[in-house]
Structures are given as C-alpha cells and as structure tokens.
Length: 225
Ligand SMILES: Nc1ncnc2c1ncn2[C@@H]1O[C@H](COP(=O)(O)OP(=O)(O)OP(=O)(O)O)[C@@H](O)[C@H]1O
Ligand SMILES: Cc1cn([C@H]2C[C@H](O)[C@@H](COP(=O)(O)O)O2)c(=O)[nH]c1=O
Image (cartoon, rainbow, N blue to C red; front, side, top):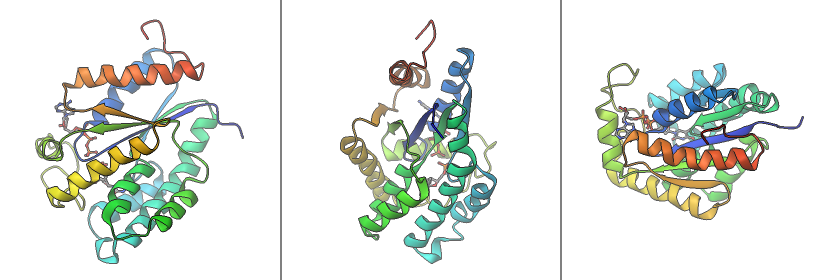
C-alpha cells in the first residue's frame, strides 16, 4: 500500500520539550485542516503500552541492555503495524514522541551492544517504516532533568525518576551527543532544534522546518505558513 501521509519523529534527551512541541504543532496543523495522529514510544498501540511500564519501571533492567532493546523493538513493531503504517496509508500526519533514534541513543550508544545487532533489530522493528523527518531537540542534559523534576504532578511518574531518568548525568550527556551524531550522519532526515529557548520560540523553529517539509510533499502549510 502506498504511504501518503508524513511521518515526523521528535527526539532528544529527558525533558527537552518534545511533548510540549508535539501538542503545539498538532494544534497548528489541525487548525490548517490536516488529519494529525499524535503517538509516542515506547507505547502508542495497546500491545506497546503494555510493554512501556515493564521498561520504564525498571522491571526489565536486570535482563540487560540487549534484552531491553529487544523489548523496545517488539513494542515498536506492534506500534508500526497497528498505528503508524495505517495512519500514513490514510494520509495522516503522524507526530511520534520518540522512535528508532531513541533506541540508537539510549541502548545503542551505551557501549554494551554491537552496532550490527542494534541495526538489525531496528530494521526488523520498523519493517520499512522510517520517519520522513526527525526533529532532534538539543538541550543541556542537566537543564532537561531539572525541567522533568519541575513537571506538574499530573504525569504518572512525577516525583519518581524512571529507569532512564535516574542514570548519571554523564550518561545523559552521552545520549545528547549520540542524538547530535545521528543528526550529523543523516542530515537529509534530521534537523536539530535548539530547545533552550522559550516554548513559543521553539515552536516557531519547529514550524519553519515542518512547513518546509509539508510544502516539499505538496501537503501545504496553510495561509500563515
Ligand atoms: N522551552 C521550554 N522552556 C522551559 N520549560 C519547558 C519548555 N518546553 C517544555 N518545558 C517544560 O519542561 C517540562 C518537560 O517538557 P515536556 O514534557 O514537553 O518534555 P519531554 O521532552 O516530552 O519530556 P520527556 O523526556 O519526559 O519525554 C514540562 O514541565 C514543560 O512544561
Ligand atoms: C523509545 C525509547 C525510549 N527510551 C527511553 C527514553 C525515555 O527515558 C523513556 C521514555 O520516556 P518519555 O518520558 O516518554 O520520553 O524511554 C529508550 O531508552 N529507548 C527507546 O527506544
């Protein structure tokens, strides 16, 4: 089946503002008449949401990084087949909070796994569905963690650092560098967004990139684009 929609992933370390920017972009696209699908990883489909808790609670940590990446990948494959591929086939704009680059940066860049193993599980998991555009939100790791700690207690994990948030600051910084490395290696797919500015300023930077991508695909960016 031909995929007519556009797949945009949002990546970066902890607390860089991905969810905030997805919400603002979804509102903007919706007002312009686009069909928008907001989703996230790990999760997004019923099966993958069930795996999310196992991963973020730390229940899978004793199995090791290799088994964790397999769990992320199994969840990803379910998410792709149940949600993302059908949404793209229906012409929707899919906005996904994290995707394959998070596995590359968090598990792949841990130094524990062979790059070929990470690349192979990625290929199996995505099964041909890769983002058309990836926005990599770049922010000092400590600043991102401070934002996460300050988040209002409406999120399920507020107050308690999850399996990945609890890692040393050096690990968070290594993940930031890994994301920047991905952007450098795949400039045709990835754009780095400075996430340190105020949310409205970041949203404008996001819109500049997204409206260009929509125009290139003849999907239009509306009168104000
Ligand atoms: N540009 C910004 N400047 C300051 N604070 C921000 C900015 N963007 C978002 N925040 C705040 O930082 C916190 C984290 O933002 P958000 O949940 O959007 O980040 P995230 O990248 O989705 O986080 P996570 O790593 O948990 O996925 C929230 O309290 C949010 O209101
Ligand atoms: C998809 C994916 C995610 N992670 C990590 C990154 C974050 O620490 C959590 C997700 O939490 P969020 O608040 O929803 O961003 O999971 C990972 O390590 N590997 C992955 O593939």
